Image 1 (spheres, one colour):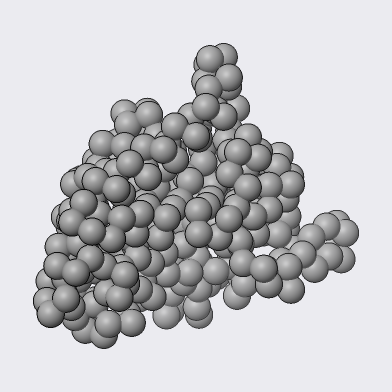
Image 2: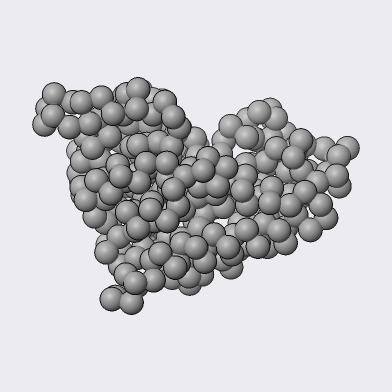
Length: 291
């Protein structure tokens, strides 16, 4: 039995995300994916936790007024063991409260295990949203969906080349691709559960993105694959924004945080973020004008 949907308040992930988009005039989400080997020289010889936190703090301070969200990827912190996870915890709390933070962890497990993940990521670590793998079924994501003020962003059509191995398989029920079945389930979950449900759709597949947006006209869509993965940015923005010119979280990681490798790395990250914001806003402007 689903928990009843709470009235819309400033705590709801979807509401807070849209407010950040409006306030900063931005659909850009910066991925905080640290790589010690790519960081500037000043971080050589510094402890792992300190290096990551200092680097992330500088990126956040340089971009906080031009983004709609931040997205740390769990793998880039787990790779450095306990020190990396400590840096992730500290990074989460250095981000301004008005900016949503999405943990990219692609979680999905047996219901009792998922319940512990949900408690950890939402209650203990304080993340506003998580990415989730739905392929074990509804009960594997239900514990996350029961949090009325959080977001659950479900993998739908991912940006990697091998995504079609499973996501493009035709489902007998309805004779449609698996990714469209996932989109339809996400639409239903968003109506039936308290959490804000969204979808992950890669910028490498704008045609599929357009079909998904047709199935889910109002759900937020996280758009990875921009920048380093050479996604089709303009086509994906046009296909993915909602009727009001919002609803799309354009995520860039390496292309932003490693835009510079010298002492001005934070300034270069800001420049890259501003450039991406401008490119996105040019595409969405005609739709904004009609609102």
